[in-house]
Length: 405
Image 1 (spheres, rainbow, N blue to C red):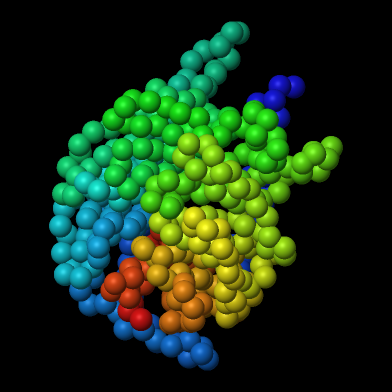
Image 2: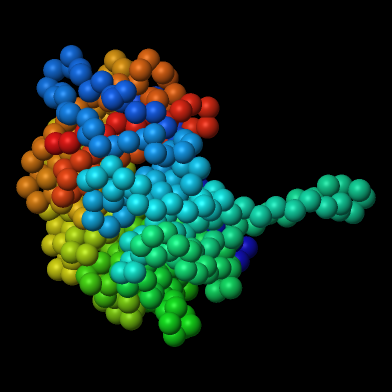
């Protein structure tokens, strides 16, 4: 059995275990893509300690065609809304500033860059044919590509990552991150971490997972990445092994940073805290913990210093489900109400850890709204929180709740 196959088996076992744990947790928690609003939005609640928040009247969903699949941060007070089309929506005015055809991606992430936006998505390629003996065979593969837009969502260019790397070695769209100027993209694969410069058409290796440096760090697989520290550093969430390795012992979660030239590699764990989700900003990182063993805390790490601090949240179970705001000034959490009537949404101040707002978003008596965690976006300057229920499910219309705090 070769080394690459061993790594693939390791990754699959970790993902399978996480998936099973998520299925179990879904009876208590929830997730995201499609639309309906709650102003439509009754933010009234009799739940003790949960305050009602006013609905933002300027959020006009009638301007959006089709079900809302997802909402992503854009620049300023704007968001990108993915529905039947891709919309650039200004929350401060309630206007759709631009729209474009929506790419047929199975999954996608968006980044704000100096001259516009970039989307990275994955498409599943499949082909059918007759094998030997008349048996039907199917060949499937994944194709990752980037679409660059200007500020008015005009398609400027497209890039196929299959020309650089084996897409089967890329785990998800979380394996990409773009520099603020859009000239560089970091890519994590089963083989390592790479940096591609679009202007120079040059690929460099930042971390080689087969090298001696990797063996000394214990890194086995890099799962999530993000630029930080003025784009000089790449933060990562990884699976690692003990050094020296212990036969039969499974991998464990770690987080760390590395400079874009490959220097300064740091791979860390923390006492009684398991890092599971990375959100990277210019000067800080959010590292949410494993939702299956929550401690009720959130870890915030400064970059490049590596200084850390923990914030204690209102309820222990909410600490595994944390969403960072557009610029990192706030973060939001979600927790299913004990009666199954809706989701408790809380917004905290990143600097102080202070609870800024909380509300109960009703499930309207629909079990599907409680089946997966809500998707949350927080716009710092407007102090606006957007919650999506059912957006990742095709058999129910997405409920959209917009409130200010």
